[in-house]
Amino acid sequence: MSSPRALTAFARSRPAFAILNNAATARTSFAVAHHHFSTSSRRAATTEGPPPANFRLPKPERWNEKKESVWDQAGNYFLLTEMVRGMYVVLEQFFRPP
Figure 1 (cartoon, rainbow, N blue to C red):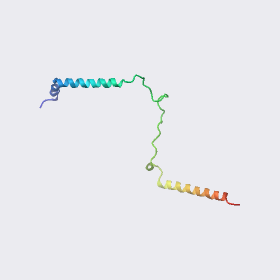
Figure 2: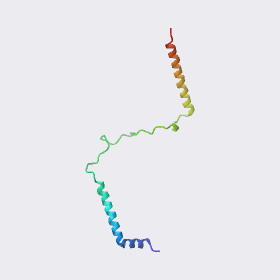
Figure 3: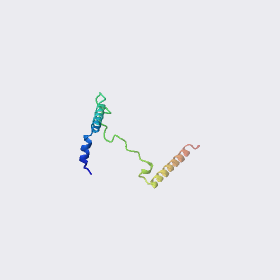
Figure 4: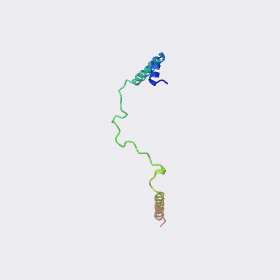
């Protein structure tokens, strides 16, 4: 079995290698020329400079990521319903006939 160095030297001696190598160089030069297509100067997205720290809003909490337990949520719900019931009783007394 021959060494990789000998195979590389053999492949480089072939005329097809020169054609492929020139094609790869031409492709690279086209990519570099294409990169400099715009003639305007580079500008930032905003005129005020970079955004301040904590510019982006954090991800909103999903329903399964809440830190409150089920019992705390149920207690808050029933507290709210009791407050609404109490307001209803007060309004009943306020608008009753004299």
